[in-house]
Amino acid sequence: MKLLGISGSLRRASFNTALLHAAAELLPSGHTLAIHDLHGLPLFDQDVEEQGDPAEVVALKDAIAAADALLLASPEYNGGISGVLKNAIDWASRKGTARETAPLAGKRVCIVGASPGITGTVRAQDALRLVLRRAGAVVEPQGEVLVFQAHTKIADGKLADERTRELLARHLQTFVAPTGRTS
Ligand code: FNR
Image (cartoon, rainbow, N blue to C red):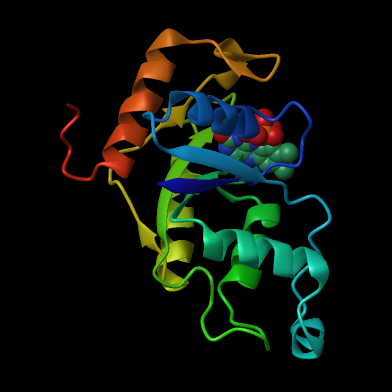
């Protein structure tokens, strides 16, 4: 499976981006994860969309369309998902003027998240599920990876906590092999 990872944080030392890098290492063999950077993605504007998607939007939509599935990592901001990620989802939920289908429609999505707090983005993940379903994506699996107190588990962009690495590896395994069989 070819996965595309998208982080809802633009922060250089983002815990959520670090989770995506860890996921790339922990995916079962035979599966790959490329990360798409949201720096430079313009704010959604329906007037702009009517003139044709800007280059950064075309790149995002092409990357999503080419992927078998998405791995999204969102920070929790004020109990919801980041504006950066919501903006990307809004663009990708639409066909624009040049496509037959919206890239998010029917796309399988796996969600993870990290925060320094004790709830580990649980509220943002719930909010993200609602938004994605509304956009026609298929959110799986039902289990959650909530990396709470992320500052104690992630250092220098590396997920160091062994227990969290195991959880993430299992979550990814279930996602890429939905029968749940691990061998
Ligand atoms: C936060 N943070 C935060 N954390 C949390 O667990 N629940 C929340 O509701 C919020 N709200 C919030 C709002 C705003 C505006 C900011 C800037 C931060 C803290 C947040 O989890 C923390 O900054 C993370 O480090 C952000 O994720 P990245 O950038 O590390 O991926």
